[in-house]
Length: 174
Length: 165
Image (tube, rainbow over all chains, first blue to last red; front, side):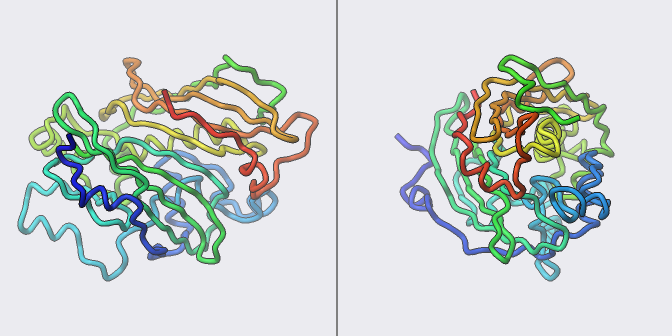
């Protein structure tokens, strides 16, 4: 018997967002921060001459950069305002990629893993958009109680429609 | 140096890549770059008292990009990392030295190129596997044509990949 997977939650399977555009284009300095943090200083990210003569034809971002580029838009509410009311706020970003949060009695949300399909690398200057869908939501018995396994499929493309990446992220509520 | 499909076989191991030790500065550099303010990555007292952890945690999101880089680098500028699937199985604490590893499971010709199924992972210093997965890469043949970029034709013919064991 399902303990946390209610009919209401089950009905969310297949729910799909519209195309959501990232607040900023793929920016050279953001790519720099990314490749510094991942210690991946390949010249295709910053050496325009090298990139122009490579198969990419222009500067590109690291393979899954676009997954991380959907940040807080300029005028969006500050998530850190929550500290005013709750000093135990964990500061964690929401992981639902534009989909509604699934609320259950389970308190912890874990990142279970990812699958990716790579179509091409985003170029510096690309405007990127994404569309997410609850691909599956299922309950599983864990050693310490029920787990809710949530699969979110997200497609990434340029606003011109050139597909870049497909991801499936696994979230685990426990 | 580019690896070619002619030069690989099932059972071969990819060269290990050791990364670390991962300091709090490495972790916060990634957290800041990604605007991820989850306190278990930079607030040690919170990590211990609120989440019951032994200390700061290395970000899973960072580990996945390190593994993507490891596999894409192995495929080289003339190859293509087409698919990847990984699970987070164990945590990595601050000051870990992590080791990326991989092994070729199977190889198959697809048209004028070759596909390679790889089992990979990332271990903590004590050997604990933290992020096992499988990946599918495409390699050129030594005397064959270059892979097209964008690799649409290659991706179209890429076989399905089994989920990680």
